[in-house]
Image (cartoon, rainbow, N blue to C red):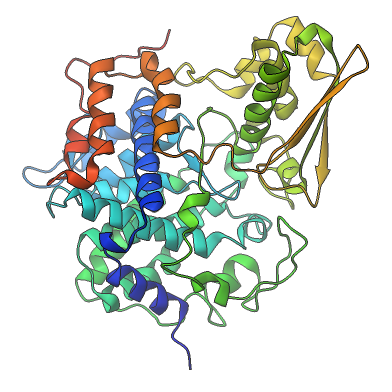
Length: 473
């Protein structure tokens, strides 16, 4: 009888070494680490994280030991640091994205940062743990994201807990048995519902899973056993969150109606899913990232001016039209005609802003939109397709002279390497709470992370050298 899914994943994680990682995978890991740190710096200025950090400093400050909260510098329990740092990485919406609704760095980076100080992790160890976590989390979620969302659960936290636990557990030196137990306990503690966030509430599940991940790892390290078939068993994780343990898919991004659990572990260590992770460089819903990027490039390449536009057709993967869930479509957080607004804004301005005011919501951007954007929104047609690549829209701009200009994306435009990540994030420096020189130090540390004897330098380089303040006007 083959080993369970959790056992196969645990074996892969426990045996993975830095020397096993191809150069493109190392480069991608650095790119995602930098994106996560910049997202944390930007998010540190938002009201939500600040409120949470105040609470945690009151409730979970430690006299000695503990872990450091990014930017703020307070020392709290490992679980509290994971929660606080997850809040900061998530707040500004600039983390990363996978399969539309999964944001790995929201739990993976906080999980790893929570333990690197106590365990004196090297840069190579940090990179290896990050890669291991991405591979586990993304493979567990790959085929199942729409099916999970269709049952009212948010796939981000549901799968995010596994990423946070693997990252922390790898750095803490968990052996195969302990890692298997940690994964099992993640299945036991995973959670996250869509309803609150769709109707005016603020979901805490994404950040709460970063905290739960630390609990799972600590319990496993201290000898608590997890089950062996918690993922694929009759009453297991996939039965609970997709409705069956047979691989039947109620919804999928493609025409696929079934999948095999063998796909989760196929090619482990040879095919790297981390390379398919996208950067949320804009503070918008993941479903608008592709249309913004593709439209901006098309307008620049063809020198299209907004007054010349007659009509815009945007073909997207059909499930991108039903964010956050195909079974519960609706305007999340009250935002209406979101894609049309983003595309119209992009055409008028030849791009979309990287910087946003801390706490600013999408509805505020639309309310402040000038008349030319509002008029152009009426000319944007969103066309769902079951064959269009996820995050890969086909954008056609028809101009008044009877011409049309088309770009058919492959869905990889936002899968940045480290060089592109550095370049794009430099645009955010004026809005970060640290000066440009300190940002350059962060970039340098990430770039040579595999040479650093102590990875916790990354944390120290985010700390404020002056009182916290927003640098976004």
